[in-house]
Length: 171
Length: 316
Image (cartoon, rainbow over all chains, first blue to last red):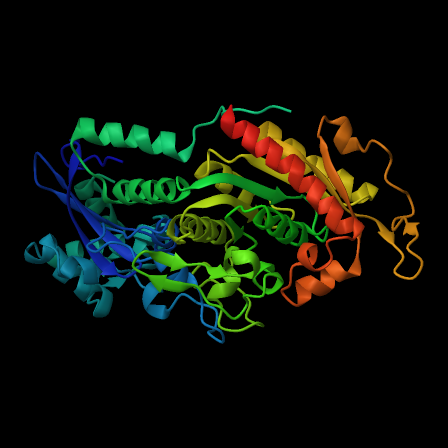
């Protein structure tokens, strides 16, 4: 899988990976030309499917013990069915980026702020347009737009902000 | 019936390709590395076992496990070192039939030590990893309801049973397959490419033969698992009072069943004998305790054919 930099259209290279939690892996890619970075977080289900092969994500540090996978995979009696916790449902990007290469760029701080204390309001039409963004990146888009609005002195995200932001990020 | 190498690529072949690609690229993918180690472990462990035979049927309730246990005892009586791998993860009954239900697999540095039952037969089964007799097999994970995820987990569990159980040198490993399964035979054929073949168990009913025929076609045509022959279980019964032979099924099995018409050799017909079930319930060997019964004689005839097949295959 390769990503294209939305700024200069060059291929981006894998830069780093980090374990978000036991079921999610965050992977950062950087543009070889301009240094622009994007990050993706693996789906917990997909991570679990790969783990179902009896392999350790990221590699092993110690050899596997006999029947290790089977012993770990067996559910003790009486344990309730697993469910996605509220935390797992939350977008992990802000937490992940806060501790990554993005932390000095201000983006991570912006995302964290945006997810906790949004200082800008949204017009009804802007909210409607945001719904057109795929759900799995909607939180990220919202945070980016709000950060753009704050940095440029807008108290409200409206069609103008949306248009400018779209122009800026090349969407 | 066709016998030979699969047209599809085995796991070993795929991994070899990956290995070459990695050497070429000088990059070791940690996931691929682990898969290669798993395949190597399977090969090492299976390399110490002379013959591997799967006992299968597309139909449940035909007596696969009972046949497996009696064949194991018959081979052991001929001096074979025998192991039974119970691949029926959800309905494992081999340990109880072999009288080792209480002997959990012991984990050591050399691998999981199989339980040792009557006649020194080694047994590995999911049952030996469960806390109690009534415990069902349940996997933990976010996708407990996903058949895809469960299938992947069960494939890894079976792979561990093949690679991590310290069978030691064996002459014969009998693999007791679950019924009506379309996902387990491919795992076995991929992981054990030198499988001697499969024996198919059926009963003399049209329904059974109808279903079993499908699995024979699947095993042979799609997976290229050699079919060694057919065992007709519950093929009539002997009256315990007068010794008269009775047909258990209204429509008696025709002289040549649809399965035989497919070219499957009939290894033997085993009459129903309630002492088979009784011995299985108590973990005792029927063929040793009742050697003169028609059923025990049938098992010996089947063992003759099977022994001849696997030994001739080895020598050729």
